[in-house]
Image (tube, rainbow, N blue to C red; front, side, top):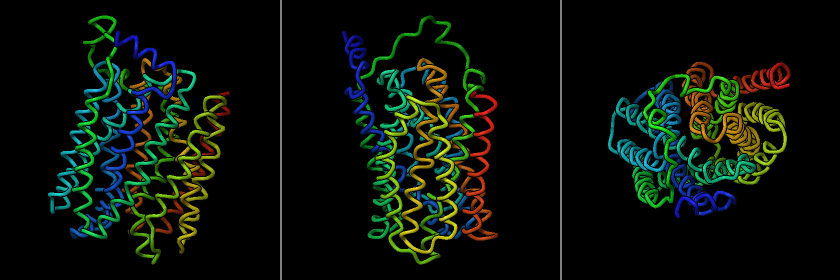
Length: 393
């Protein structure tokens, strides 16, 4: 009886499971992004260098990257709901560690753990949501899921910065802990019954590399990684850039960026459903290049807000379109592997971006760091055009 209800709901996009997951995704993302722009500053207050602060900030995404393939394979074999609840409880523990520690090395450890559990949670969230989205509206459905993420990225940093200004930076970690704890409890109410494996052999198969990573999707993972480099260095260093250049209300960047993404992501999803991926990726790389070029020279808040708009049309549109393309090419029955493979590149970009960016900024300054990111976007655009001409055609 219940399974029949679940199948009925899956014929329409706005069913209970899908909407409930949208809300939970927004809450979890918001809690994680509350502390994302604060980690580098927090590490520096502990007496560490800018380079090591960049390593601490980037470790989060690198850890997530290594977990995505395992999480994706596990999502295709075991109960996705239990995996997501467990991963969120893991984030609760990790964020509490941020609040308690006073050493940059311990902060690095808990940043790593947070990345591990976030990598699992993010992968499971997408694969679980894809089970409740009609196949013909997959790109649109993932686009709306991305909108929920955008809401979190918009509200989270501003709440974190506001709490830091009023009560101190460690209070932001405590608030994030409480929000994540609430979300993990709410996840137990998800209405989901997994389909039984076709046979015991399929259920008990060992994890093999070729079953965790879809090699044919690696080019899309690579393009996603290039786009997400810009997100990594903006999120990790924007607060410090604002302080150095005397730009106030820097948190408005996240709000404007999120509003534009809320308006643009459904459009990107519909375009990716109807046309080829190049209709989204070519504008995405172009906007990313312009955003990084302007940010390298930005001296006022209006320019920062223009960067927020361009960045929303860049990585903000390219990211969900690439996710949907990977799932579409591999099939929803392998949505976990497809998502895990895609995030190899995305997490690598958003993780190593701040690490390499910290090294460049220490030696040559923030302007050079963002100029280098602009050049990287040009490289990404040229690489995709070559791939489109030689492979996709």
